[in-house]
Length: 444
Image 1 (spheres, rainbow, N blue to C red):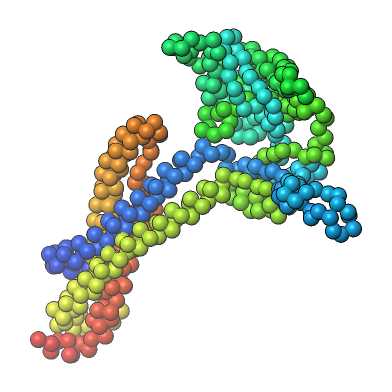
Image 2 (tube, one colour; image 1 turned 90 degrees about the vertical axis):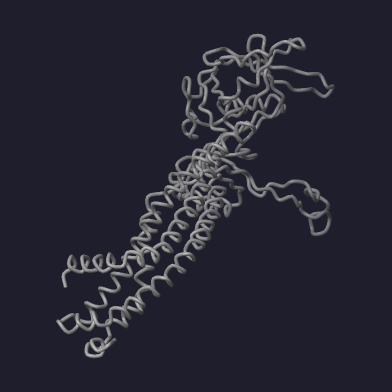
């Protein structure tokens, strides 16, 4: 029997019992719609979570710091007398020296290793009559683009006498001479302006000593909702010089190591593996990808749970299909005998009844996919309006989507429902295929 003839015969047989087929398919519609809606909801929650986590940092970066053992060597005992560090005093297990940085660069998949240091002293930033307190970081890179940062104004290049600022830095400025009740001044436009960085330290008598540094703002970074929004970036050598001035001693990175380095990885898929390698080398490694991976794993499990709930409804519908097909075989016993008498093989009969069961699953799955998608869009509109109002009251960002249906989900649900229909009709179809023609023709 040709495939086209088989398809025509299957849908012709189904159209003869429209009411029974429709009632049987309703169970499949409900189960498929439940799968589509529930899995789409889980995917939408995952998508929103990833959007919220996007601002925690570049997912291809790993922040590496020295690992510290908080328990020093025991006092006394041994052959060392009473020398060494006291218990509880921090002890560096391994420092981020230049040789250690070379080891990090040698890891396959690492694109760059960029040291950075915080300005470790008091600081005030001045512009005209305004002042502000900011976070200042020195980076051993000529361009902040190496850290995945982008500029909305100017560029991201670092140089002597230049500073690149985060998007929220201007909002930290205020007028120290502002009178009570006066309207606070708007955040200043700092791009292209000369600003003063006032660095402070105190001597042994408690006298404050100040050092002024005049720099020009050559770039304003794009907002990331992360640390960079509130940070001023300078070349590492300048921050090192200021830290040496405030600490009153020279800093030797070959002996003391850097406070932190940023390891840039080529592919986000390699981040967790490289982070583990760095930890095994004796350093602390932190990457936003670990949070994202954990969140994604949770939502994948949630998708399976939600999909399983819908699949239960499909399994109940499968029992209905099996019952319908069994009744159909009893009603069409003489028809089966006649088909065999005129030359139909067991395989032809099996294909017809399996096709009818699969057809019921397909029609129910198609209806379920359509209803599930439409219901998802309706839930989406209602949920986004409600959550947008809640976000507006709390000052947060509204979600972009509440229920998200990827292209593969309706296709999967349609194929799954068709397979469920075929499996549920397997036993009745085998009964029909193995009937003896003479006995079937004599059946009343």
